Length: 399
Image 1 (tube, helix red, strand yellow):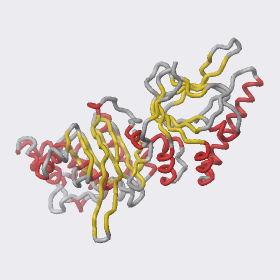
Image 2 (cartoon, one colour; image 1 turned 180 degrees about the vertical axis):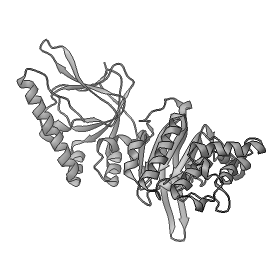
Image 3 (cartoon, one colour; image 1 turned 90 degrees about the vertical axis):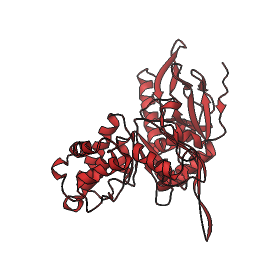
Image 4 (spheres, one colour; image 1 turned 60 degrees about the horizontal axis):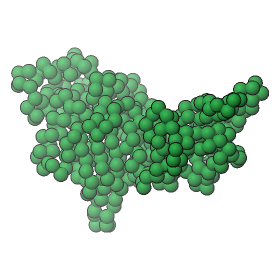
């Protein structure tokens, strides 16, 4: 078998790899962003906010987008909602090219029928009741018969637990209830995609949890939810966490494997790492082979192989997306103590390989990451020694 991996020309495109639930295949994507660049111009000159973004989000995923102020996350959100125009590139939502195939009027009508937007500050009309606010998108998009709209709106308020407050004005209910009403309004046209910009930013913990539970319920029912947030604790509730830094996407495998890095350090690793592709069953590292890279798994799975007493292959571990291997050899020196190969019963394996010098430079810049990896390596070496004394095999490699 050919042991040479296929190396792709770019690393950034791997950020489009779906790591959460949702099927593969071109037709499965709810959102496809292809090489999107956004340049703002003013008296001081030009400023590139998005630097060639490639991103795919599958149907039925709950996705969070995080990044510091000025990172480009709001601009990215505006590309998805059709509120702003990319300088170049293509945006497809639910199979529709929302820029090159539509003018502003068409896009506004499309947005009303296909997209629900939840804002941080609710943006409910203060002189209309909650019921009337929820009915507004139906009126605009001409959804349902006129006489049926109040009944449908009341049903949506019931979904979020606000049927008893339906006839109250927004200022007569709590901020949490206003946000729930805003979500009911976003669902008024039964859109397949819900986009939320800091939906819990102004809420207490109890109200924020209610919003998250509702989003999870909507995803379980087949909707796609994309949420921009500053709160890292919320990302534990989503299927995928997409991080944007300085207008570029951080590779999801890097963020999962090295979560203690700062965003700028994650972005540096994303740009430095080589992207390698191995076929099912292909050997990645041979036993007692020199290891010169730190490997992060972006897609697919690998297995760690040892030789038994009769020289048979024994699989002792299986590693998947966001996990890694090679750190023991890079930190402690020596040759590989096991073989690593792409699992034979899966698809191609995509890896990000960070070379030895870049790996050690990274650890010098992030003492916390260095300390954590050092503790993991020490624990695994001790487990291996313990197993050897019992006549067993070496312990697991990787995260």
